[in-house]
Structures are given as C-alpha cells and as structure tokens.
Amino acid sequence: MEIEEIKGQAVYQKEKKTPCFGLGFLCGLLLTLAVTGIVLVAFGAGDDKGKTKPNTPEEILQEIQVGEGSAISYDLVSKLQTLEYIVHKYYYKDDITAQQLDDGMYKGLMEALGDPYSQYYTAEEYEDLMESTEGVYYGIGAYVTTDKETGYPKISSVIPGTPAEEAKLRANDILYKVDGESTDGLSLEETVALIKGAENTSVVLTIIRDQKELEITAVRRKVETPTVEHEMLDNGMGYLQILEFDEVTMDQFRDAYKSLQDANMQGLILDLRANPGGSMGSVVEIARMLLPEGLVVYTEDKNGRCREYECDGSNEINIPMVVLIDMNSASAAEILAGAIQDYGKGTLIGTTTFGKGIVQQVMPLKDGSAVKITVSSYYTPKGKNIHGIGIEPDIEVEFDGEAYYDSENSYDNQLEKAKEVLAEMMNK
Image (cartoon, rainbow, N blue to C red; front, side, top):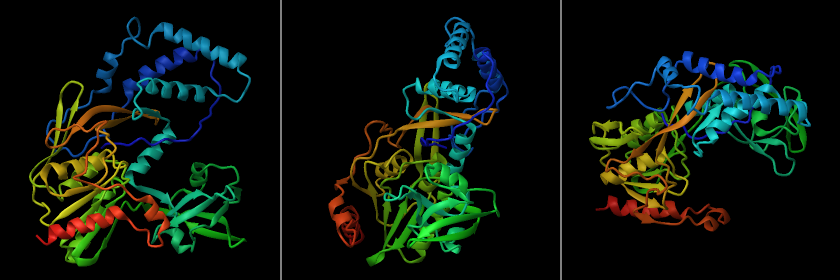
C-alpha cells in the first residue's frame, strides 16, 4: 500500500538517560533491527506478479556494519555522547527529555535523505498513520477546525449516522471543554485526541452555541470516514468523487458505483480533484472495476526489480466516462487517471496533476515506532513515469475560483465542462 505523508504532532517524555546514550542508541538500533518483524504495508494483494520477499531481520542485521565506511560508527557514538553532554549541561531549558533527543535524531536521519516522503514515526504517530490509512477510528464522527473569531476548536461538519449526529451536535458548535478540560490553547490534534477514545465510552462536550453554554454527551464507537461521494445528475449522468484512497474506499466505491448503475447511469463523471492519493491496494482494486484486461500499474525498485498489478478486464466500464483532475490530484489518484488515459477509457478534464510517481514502504519497528521510506518508482500501463511531471488533461480547463466562491450556486466551471463533454460522448 502506498502511504502518503502524514505529519504527527505528538511529544513523548520519559526519565532522563545517563550520558551513555550514544552507545545505548547504537545497541538499541542493532537490536531493534534484529528482532523486528518487518511488515510490508506498501504493496497490495499476493496475486500480483514479481513480488519479492522482504529481508528477514537477520539478513538486515548482517548488512549493518559498525565502523569505517558506515554512518553508524564508534566515532559517531562518541560524538553523540558529546553532543548530549553539551545539551544537558549548557542548554538553557531543563525540560528537554532523552526521548525528545532520541526522536529528533531518528527523524533527522530520515530527513537527511532529502525526500519529503521518507520519515520516522514515533509509536503514537505510527498509530495515527495506520488509523488514517484505514479510514476507521473510534470517536464520535465530527470534523473539527479552528474558529477564526475565538481561536477555540469548533465542529465544522458532522458525519451522518454517527454518535455526533445522534447527540445533535451541529456545525459551528464551539468546543469549549472536553470532559471538563478546557480546550483553550490546545491544538486541533490535542483536542481530537481528547474526543477520541475506547469504543462504547462516553465523552462530555461543553459547547457554545448561540452564545449559550451546553453540555452534550456522546458515546464513542467505530466511525468509518466517508471517502466517496456520489449522485445522479440530469440526463442519465452519474457523478462519483473519490476524496482519497483508504482501505475503506474500495467498498465505498463499489457501493456508490452500484447505486449509480442501479439508477440507470448512462455516463460517468469521475472526480479526482484534490485527491492526495493513499493506498496502492485500494486504487488498484478500484481500477479493476473500470479497466480492460492488462496492466494497471507497475513499480520498479533501485535494483531494477519490477512488480506488476494487473486487471482481468471482467468489470470493464462500457459507458462514456470523463475524469476531473487538477494540480492537487496526486499519487494514487494519478495511477488511476493515468491508466484510464492510457487505455482511452475516459477523457481527462482540468489541469495537470501534482506529479508524484514514487511509492513508499512502511516498516514497523519493535518499540512501536516505524519508518516510511521511498522504495520504488511507478509507471503507467504505457510505461510513463510522471514523477515531477504530472498527467496532462485531454481538455485543459482552469478552475474559476471567483465564480465558484462568489456565486450563490457555487458555479463549478470544470464540472460544467465535464457535463458538456460527457453529453457529447453519450450522444455519439
């Protein structure tokens, strides 16, 4: 599965270590790699061709050399000990913990690659990452943003059928307290962390609505994030938008697509605008619901090893299709758009996509932390790598933001062009 960059905000503390930190780090790194079960999260189902087994922990350990020619050397241990001593003796604040120094060093190691998609996750950040890519969490089902006037967090929208809706929470409710704890000065991440919790537990929200203070209790449960939206438009046109590619997206797409088919859809508008990407497995499965027999995408690593993802063509779409793309359509969204374009199964409308043609692999470590690292490039069925280039639309249409945001009807000129083009395709 391809994992997009997600930044965590957590801070961790534990008891201070002794100045033998450097040696401890080195030994800890070796032991972690030796006993960690590497889990491949970056790639899809086992029926894909060319899959290579990951190195075992023992094989990884054999490749690690401590000494001359390695970044991890005894000189490094000595230097780290010296730097830690300087920090603890001279840094003007006393609240810097050994854990913070550890995490900063691990993060710095990955940042040295100069790759914005390769990074280190603390245990809590990794848990948040997995929760995000699954598209499922335990909470109340409300989106939270910052109120510009008060600076407090507020409800921006409520997901239908969730505890938030059942508790009658509304958009623009100011979140004043969570279980009696003031949200003043808390970040959105900290506020959301207070609201989330174990399934079937209650959370008491003190809100400000119409200048009145109210207490609302909601019972947390499993919430599935909606990643697909759909509706039937006029003249037999179906509209289906994919917001991102999470693990839940496959089933949501399948249900939405069937709903449109049951409504006698004669043409499809597939909206991938502002879709940042996500799971490789998810986008491949969705592509298999649309494409003819052949390659969906293939990847190639630094050693020239390829992995192919194929489609049997049994669900090939047989109605006209247009695909909306823009500069924020990235990664997995580009995989789908690129394959549709290569096979001529749809007309791409909008602006050139973001241009992310690389794949990341997530490797969990024994202490609950993880690293995400770029491991391969991907190519469209016709062999195009779009990294740094993007996918050009068949029909270029710049988004008219002024018409959209200043109009009472939110006039979407790109969508209107898609309707126009689709109507012509349907009438041929």
